[in-house]
Image 1 (cartoon, each protein chain N blue to C red):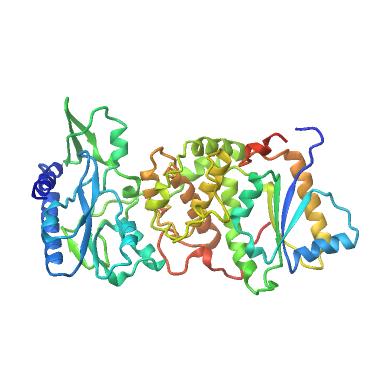
Image 2: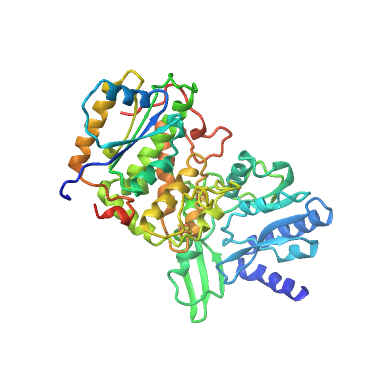
Length: 144
Length: 339
Ligand code: SF4
Ligand code: SF4
């Protein structure tokens, strides 16, 4: 494992719940590792599974997708579609060789700052044990 | 033109039916019926098979005039699905006739369900099929080209320059034929040839998927690295696929460029993930993608893994069946959750 290596996690957060949840974690001064780079998306349904592949290609060690709890979607049904699609995508990525601990999909509401912080902490610890991701990674990023 | 037709006619005898009689009789019936359809103006074109480069291969034949029908062949090497050619025929007026086996019919239904082919503008001519030969498998075995080929008493009889070779036919059939549940196409507009007796279809047990799964995460990554590294990005797998019919393909658009033109193993993952995932829940399990791949990438191991997941997760019993409501374009509130 490279010296000074820290896991890099790309977090796709839905604008209405999880992004607000992440924000709350920050404003409540909850402590969690600075390993996650949050990308705000209008809905978890916006997360094309190709985004996840791209993240792994470009150097992510883990990917987190967070959306509103089922039933609470701002667009009523977006996350139901997400759930179907990403269940399949997640298993398929696993089949291609991605360790399932590197891809986490979870529901975080705007009031669940604690859950967001805990999720990032747990993921970071798991990935720290796994080491840097190599599967699908672009050679440009393979050095670190 | 006349000379070419005669050559094609001769191929009816050579291309597999020599000695068996039954299939060449179907060939003659087909030619006669297609000639009639074209002469009567019921179709403006007919898509069938003509003799190919070797005795093991056929090629798609577009017949425009009644006289051309004589060049059609039907034999145990008629593996290619013709369904996808219909995409090129949607702009012109008039009906197009097409020869379909049961497996091709599923491909047709897929294109119709995806609103890419108008069912009213195709005339389906069904033919009972006792299984088609995997030419690639035979070619891998022989050094010399096959000059004549046919089936006799369950044996594949191949004539090469240096002699005759016999192979057990069943072992050289396409994999999809072993799973075929009904060799006689239903819901077609016209049938040629006799009913074919069904055989015990091998159940889909996803054994090939389980084999990959058993390799563990690191083993799987190494396995797919090796497989994908061979990919030429020729797109033959995509082009033949009846479930892959978007007018604008995400693998080809420049803005945003999902698939850079550079060929690295990393980008091969993007390509193969996208190809397989975009047909998830719509793949009809025809195996055409794998059949046409020039470097034998086991694409069905990707498609079948997705079928298995969809079956297990959402209780879709026959995920290869073309449905109006495809499993990834719908949901139920009590779908399984992540954990
Ligand atoms: S992915 Fe392959 S098996 Fe599935 S429909 Fe397309 S060509 Fe047929
Ligand atoms: S047919 Fe084979 S080589 Fe060609 S793009 Fe598909 S997988 Fe790659």
